View 1 (cartoon, helix red, strand yellow):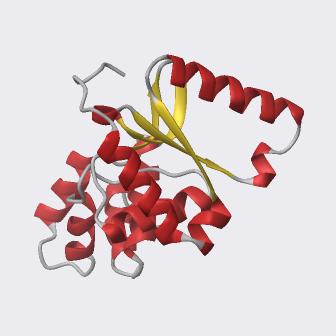
View 2 (cartoon, one colour; view 1 turned 180 degrees about the horizontal axis):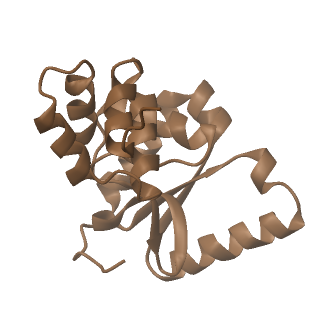
Length: 177
């Protein structure tokens, strides 16, 4: 039985995954799970210059900020929107102030939390989310809540609010994670 390494498998998948956002999701997940690092994937590209999928994988590896890992359909939709609108400088699922936020513009101290009813309904989730937002706000981080429905039904409004928040936020010195 032939077996390939995870980095080679990602390259093989790049030949058949035509949606660049799904390929980004695969690459980010493989990296997160320590199955295929960026260096290993780039080595695959160098060893297989004519392989189908090579160009697609290279495009994903060269994304501004690199491939970003998302954990929900709503986060994936927002990531797609950010990429399509050319909004850069963010980290997905980043740690700041002792909390993990869905999207973070670290140099602007702006975070976006994508709230869906399924994961955020109920008293415990409600209380936890309010404490998180209050703690981050007290630490000087502007937290902008966005729902999956807003991303789907009002992408222009989401982008306008985000751009306004990023524009009004003062650039900060780079903080440690």
